[in-house]
Amino acid sequence: MKALTQQKPSSTMIYTITEIQYVTDDPGDDEGNLLGLPQELFIEVDDNTDSEEKLEYLSEEVSNRTGFCHCGFTITPEID
Image (cartoon, rainbow, N blue to C red; front, side):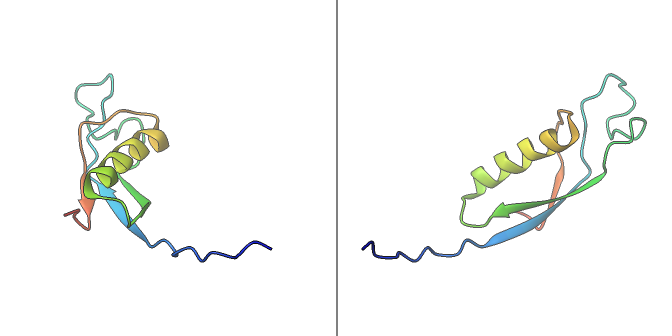
């Protein structure tokens, strides 16, 4: 009989991503307004990861969800 092991429940944090600077073909549309790209995203991240991994995950998730690369964004709450 196998012993049951208890796994520590993972805690998560929801980050709000705003002021996304999209890379588009229109040099005057770095916020994606003309293309109707989202100006705000809510992304849930495992809180047990370090700051660098969180930033990398958030960055990739912005591109994955929107289909566009970006040059940066604002994160709330800030990551230490």
